[in-house]
Every structure is written in C-alpha cells, then in structure tokens.
Image: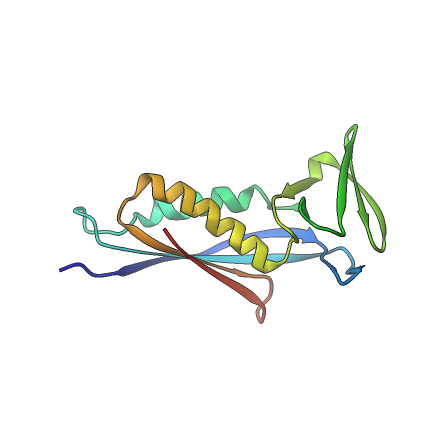
Length: 158
C-alpha cells in the first residue's frame, strides 16, 4: 500500500529590495523580509522518510541566500529594462532610471519580482534539483510570504 506523506520546512528567511511595474507605472523601490516554507509530498522511502529535513532545508537556504540582501530585478519585464555598464546595472522603469552597483543586484529570470513569480522560480529550481536525486517525491509546494498578511503559494507536480 502506497501513501502520500508531506514534509515541511520553514523558518527560512531572506531580505531583499524590489519594485514591480504594473499598467505602465512602477511602484517605488522597497524591501521585504521574506519568509519561505517548502512542503514536499511523496512516498516514504526504505529509510522511513520522504526526504531528510536537513537536506531539504539546506537546499532551500542555498537558493534563498542567493537573493539575501540584494536588489531583485526581472529580466523578462516589458516595462523594466536592465543594462550592465562597467560595474553598474542601469534600470529603466516607467517612472525613471536607477543605477545600482552590480554587486548589489540579482537579475532573475521572471516577468516581475512579485511574490508569485519568486515563489514559482523557487519551486521550479527545487523541482529540478530534487527530482534528479529523489524518485519518491511527487509534488513540491513553496509558500513565499512578503508580510504577515501577504503570501504566494505555488505547487508543482514532479
């Protein structure tokens, strides 16, 4: 008899700045203390677990650490355009132009740096990483909260 079991890790946080363009405008640059929770669903393996909590938490922390204390910028936005010049990243938005040191920026393969898109990106990365190492995992869910009252939830089958 097979059964689905879920394993959840939480308490993984990162702080980052971003802005989002919408309908021809762009909100001001601001930051969040993001909180990430990941749930993995699957069958219990011969060792009696779906996945080792430590291994899952380590992978999620590694992904989030790449964004911690950076300015997050999209590379697929129709309204936000980035150009690297020397050691600076110039960002053109509907509301003006920013210039940031390259070392302070992470450009992400998303349409916008919304909670939804960031959660989807994390979920895709985890799906790619975990599916190659664990054949018992069937689904991954990522919850990315940008405040106590606002969060995005993305689930993907593996």
